[in-house]
Amino acid sequence: MTPNDKRSYSPRLYNADLAPAQNKNWTWYNMFSFWMSDVHSVGGYIVAASLFAFGLAGWQVLLCLLIGICIVLFFANLMAKPCQESGVPVAVLCRQAFGVFGANIPAVTRGLIAVAWYGIQTYLASHGLMIVLLKFFPELGYLNEMSWLGLSGLGWFCFVAMWFSQAVVFWYGMETIKRFIDFAGPAVYVVMFLLAGWIVYQVGPSNISFTLSDKVLSMGEQFWFMLMAIALVVSYFSGPLLNYGDFTRYMKSMDELKKGNFWGLPINFLLFSVITVVIVSGTVPLFGEMIKDPLETVSRMGNGLVIAIGVLTIVIATIGINIVANFVSPAFDFSNCSPQRISFRTGGLIAAVGSVLVTPWNLFNSPEIIHYTLDVLAAVIGPLFGILLVQHYFISKGKINIDALFSDQPGQPYWYRGGFNPRAIIALILSVVVGVAIILIPHLKELANFSWFIGVFVGSALYYFLAKDSKVDG
Image 1 (cartoon, rainbow, N blue to C red):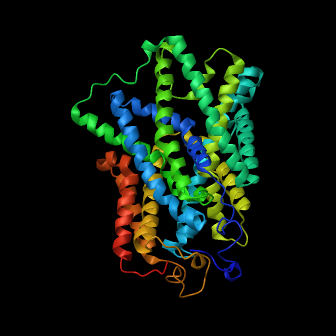
Image 2: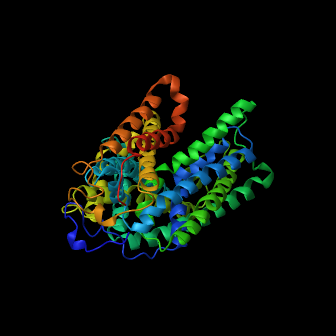
């Protein structure tokens, strides 16, 4: 698996950013912080709170959380290994299954999905900044009376500010990103603990409930909602799971990585979920309604300075997850399409500009579009994930020929047919069609919640059936 002379690598497939990582200095704490940044966001808060609103008993929800996050942990360790050992990003790893040029198909797909969600997360962060500005400078409210392309003047100012802030962090490279997420994740814990303590002090411990719904469920309904809760947890992490190798390539060892995953996933996620429920449960007696948005909860506290610190900390965490989940990976993806012309930085700039062009506030303001986007996202990510794992662990028997990943010479292991692997492409198209059909057919609507699992199963099964007799010299 050790690469040879890089001078033999094709310039159509190689640049310094896509090359195997040389400086593998990430420790278990860096990976722990990676998952904290992923979990400790507005999205993570809402997902955790929504599970307790299904009407299930507290112990049932915690069991679902534990099962779901252990599934994530299992797949995270599987996805981490090939990139940690080879040091290449996921866009390059895709060449093993799809061919050295066919890898651009999953790369562009990943990149476009991430661009849309990068914009949406930036918009959510900008909303938090707007809350702080209006709290201290209410006279700025007049800017909300004017709008352009569906966003107010103040909204544009806050969005551009958040957009620029993230671009600056990204521009300084992976070491800066590592330091940023090392700070962002723990910082939110401080705010969450203080907010939970304040809520409990205000309403009293007896008014905190771990069941956020008055529904009375039958045994069948309880079982179904538990399955949905598990699926929701896994689906929420499906994006970071697919992009995970873009960060594990910098890990010192698999032992360090597994330790970081253990503390960052089951331990961290369960603790964060419990704190979330304490806060959300306390909003009912305190404010007379259940509030699932942490920004709104913090904004209702009396002290202006406390509100500013709380909201800005949550905004920082949202920036952290946005960079981790939606900025780094498309930068590698777009660079993979044309390594000679597009560097890691240029790829990130393309993603950033694209996130504005999709006008994410219009996407986010339509619940129906968000719902379908989430389901389609899972229907595409699942098959990609399954195909990559089948290729590495079953077809290539856990081996990677690093030199072949950067070779455009016919006859090389990942050349397949003209640089494309028809088997992987066919498996991807058919499995995505199955997933999208499930989403669009009304009678199968409830199965859409399991589109990631279905995608992984169908994609991996199809690809294994098509490629099991192929010989790839890993």
